Length: 340
Figure 1 (tube, rainbow, N blue to C red):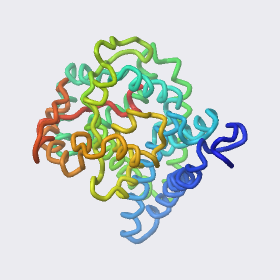
Figure 2 (cartoon, rainbow, N blue to C red):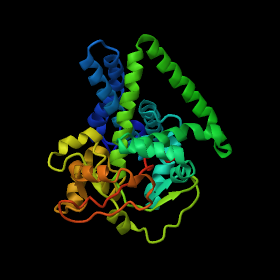
Figure 3 (cartoon, helix red, strand yellow):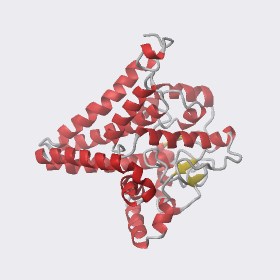
């Protein structure tokens, strides 16, 4: 079907996206299910492969939620919403609605800021024992802050009066997911234990890549509360955005994160789907090295600033030369899955 056909007559938003979107969605679903089968198998190598496959399928599902939030997958809004809900269930983010995730993420683009509903920094500053535990876990490169952000999505509707309107969905998803995990545990307790290992790998990966996308202003506020725009214009947006790709020299490796690392191109034209971001980045930033930062460049900063990143309000800045990322502290608590 032609990409120019009316939206009601075609499924995918672009004819060019039929194959890549089908493969990505199919991989997320089949990889997730196959991962559980491998984690329940007898050989240790199958268990290891299953945990890695499950973690990566959940990662692709998370980035497909992002695509659905920008309506880049399907021609019709309701199909994007359905895909977003399904991918959210796979990625473990289904305790909140897709529409809530989409609303806060679009605010991130509109306000050119990191807008987050839960102030984990105030939460930790008031709880010294928990803060000490978080520091210990982050020192060991265990994603404690990312875990806290995912847990608060579940527990705030239970504990905060203003969040009670979201409680029915939270309870429904808790019961459903617990029942499914219980069914898997009845068949293979090992598969459930390895699922939590896979989920930890997912959180660690999301934590790493989300840390180095922006040096935006961060606001902890209600989902609909306005924040001052000030001088955060389009120039500010690009000057405070970086593309932390898996590899700058082997672009095909960036498919491992569904090209999510091409963040400058995405923020310049948010309606461009994931499979066209490398070409768009090349068109917009050819010859410029400022925007593109490979995993190799930010790994040292991720390690050296892992404790500073927990409570610092300053994301740091990018310098020049081989060690240009050393002063780039990065951010916590900015994942589109947990800012609600």
